[in-house]
Image 1 (cartoon, one colour):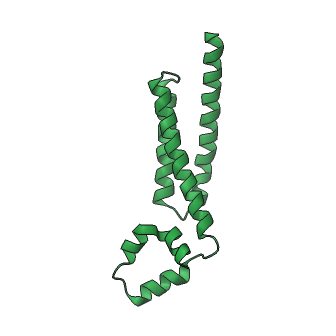
Image 2: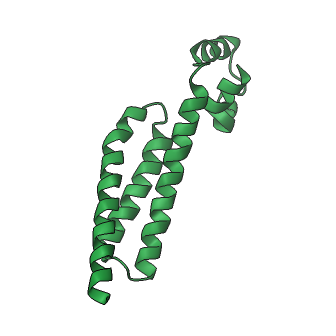
Image 3: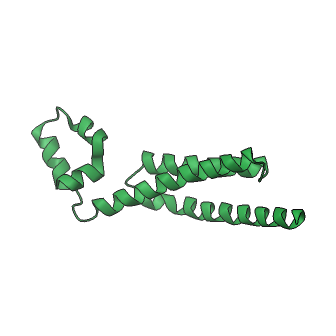
Length: 122
């Protein structure tokens, strides 16, 4: 149960529940998803770090002038949106599905642009 509490609430949850009534604590414990909290935590963790990696990748491509600025902006926007969505609505994992497909599309476009630029420089 302690692991489920940690993975679901972490430090923010501990601060949020500090000083609450026994009824509020009991309700929180009753609502813990003991069997799936670890998996959902890892899912959120991976999505946040994918978004962060996307921001760094886009920024590096801007610095090295590998991509057009509009494409870099889209990458940064997708990365920040992924992190914000995951952190802002952590229990609504299904909302991330459209963003997942947009990320895949962005990476495909980046691959195409980089491949074309390699052919023109060869």
